[in-house]
Length: 200
Image 1 (tube, one colour):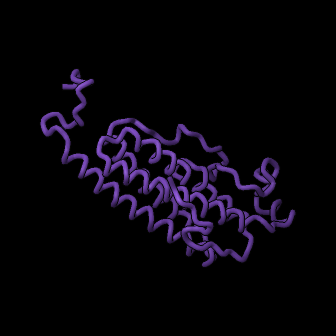
Image 2 (image 1 turned 90 degrees about the vertical axis):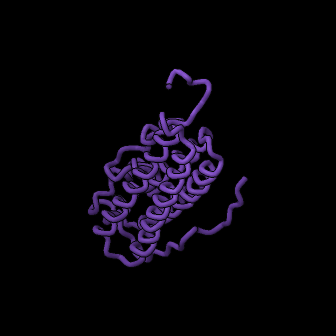
């Protein structure tokens, strides 16, 4: 059960429209390393996680990723809501506009729609946590790429916040991996499950 507060996790107050920036930032809405993929990954993986403490970490971070998904949606919306037709045509935003007007829709910067194949829930604690650490690093790199392309301080501020959260999540998943490894069978390096004795 979650309690939803009707506010963004971090404020987004963009004053100028910028369709080119929106086309880049939207990758963190529905791209392969974006916030929707992260949230679905962690909230799916938590069910098979044998350590309840680690499942709690996945729930906490997965829930926060939903808040980041909301922030990215707000950023894209504020960047596109008042675009003129001239701005839409001159910025290269016309293909997106044709399909979605200025609605916010999950896709990568290259136009590829969100797909659940972009994240994994393997059911193996070590495999899932290592993937999560890599996912957080890929998201950090994406945010850093965005920061190199953007010069509007109103956009830079929330993007820097989101980049920092990726670093924090990477660290928390590292701690979760250490907790998981501490409970592994040291000889076989897997989480013992009596239904899978053939793995011995």
